[in-house]
Length: 204
Image (cartoon, rainbow, N blue to C red; front, side):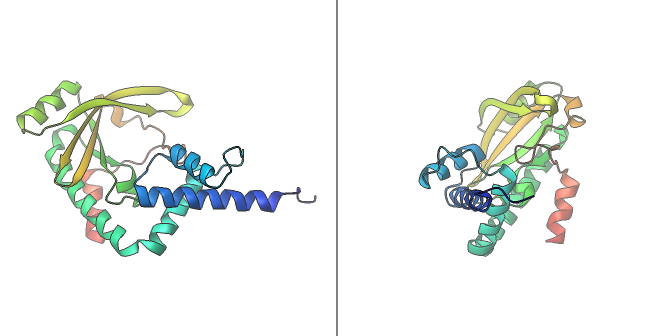
């Protein structure tokens, strides 16, 4: 069966868009795939294209960009973020913290917040914990997606630890067994315990 006309051009277009979106994310700290994709499409005059790259393609292009242009600085920033994450997980040990997102996956840089999932009977327990430790915070809400398109909203606490921003999403206790889906590939979201992160740092 012959190849469809324009197939090569479509593939090239997806690659160019993925690379442009990745560059935006690497240089501006943008971590919203959809927003980076839209901006890249506008920059390239392809905002009406239906042939947009998937989040996995953009993340792969982001890794390539960081490897080529930011290798030493990005690796150092990632190491510092993971060390800060480990300290934070030690502090929040009563809430079975799990590291998620770019700091876990290895694509984080100085712009990226450290995202932790905490598990508690009530979000009030985390709020009181923060107040007891005299940690100034902002409170909001985090939208979380599950398989089958189910959506949930959970309490979110944000604060600064030195120069690093931390985001704590508070799940019910049984949330440990129910993995949300990843915004990157739609599969079960990877979560790392304190021990797993410590092991990663030791291997580095």
